[in-house]
Image (cartoon, rainbow, N blue to C red; front, top):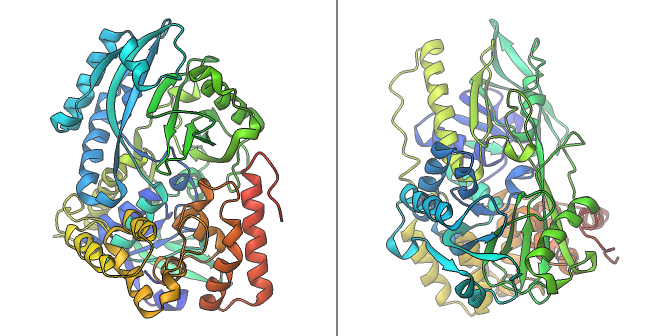
Length: 545
């Protein structure tokens, strides 16, 4: 996956231009490219820099939406969750969840059992993953540290943990492998008009400083929380579509919060659902999420002390002996949900996660709302609408049917996964490094193995989270990482799971990236300092220099 320049595309008219490199835009690009359409995608920051790297890191049906009778959303999400086992097996980690019930909760055991039965039916999951109900004693045998006062029991069911940024990156790589072109740090500054219709986008390249335009028959706005900013580039559009809400997560050590399984409970403060979840890194637990209206700066969303206090209060309700405080927090992250504004007034946590697709008077297609698990369906539906418009406005007919439910995303092909395992088995690498490569990159781990074969030093652990120079090189050369923050936050995901965010090896990473990207020594230092500032903004205690 290589970054194009404006000169590369200035003579081309694409069928579709997509604004936004989150999971929805990536899914739309993949859908369109697999159907033979010419596609260009641009992102003003890094891919997945917004909501798509700041979620609860789950592929899930949304069991809590059953309570608000959003049955179609849950059915769709459950089916897409199961499909991801085929499309992206390397990024699907099946885990048991326990839905806790305490005296006073709105659900009872009978109602919870009925809801989880419906969840099983929607999922079509195998018998080994069907739910079961646990009485108080059986539940406490599984989780002996839980608050026992008022505990009635709970329901044992399954959802999937994932790495949301990697889902986005590998989906976009799948789009590029199918023929799309993409670039990060390409900011849309305006819309090109022709004969009264939107006919492309005006671009500022934030890396080279170049400006220009990209022409396309159909432009799709999938900018997530920035959807309204793009809509307002069209003259006459002024009413907001979104009601963004802020979701915060905190990370603590398992020794401070002894939890064996993900649990689903209600906050003692306001009854909202909170999830403490053992991370894929088994020494950590992350707790989320808040759900509050947000009207602050969208390009730098971080957790406030009030956000963290709310989540720690819920965690301490679940395990009273933990006595979690700010000093126990390893890391935080915060993101915005691009929810479609409902009619009337309702609590932020009650706003629907359903998505909407609309067409402006000048033909700009916008998709807003939704959730990561249903991103493939969102991409499918917005491209179906784009195909209709291409037919009506340009006479483009005979576009092939969708294949996105049958073609694995990049790294997910079973044959490639098998080949990668075989390739790595013969290399003299630390087993932990091999495991990391396979779990994060799937079949693309072979590409990292190529680098280790050519240079033994490339496969050696740098000293933090099994990071290697091979992984840095792969991120730059094949995943368009352009900053140290890109690498640690969205390619390697170390930012979330280490107290220092990986700063102990940031100098080595910056030097390797600088060699590949032509940075000066001062630029390398500036990259480390910029990342240090980002880590500090998402920690509760100062990060040393």
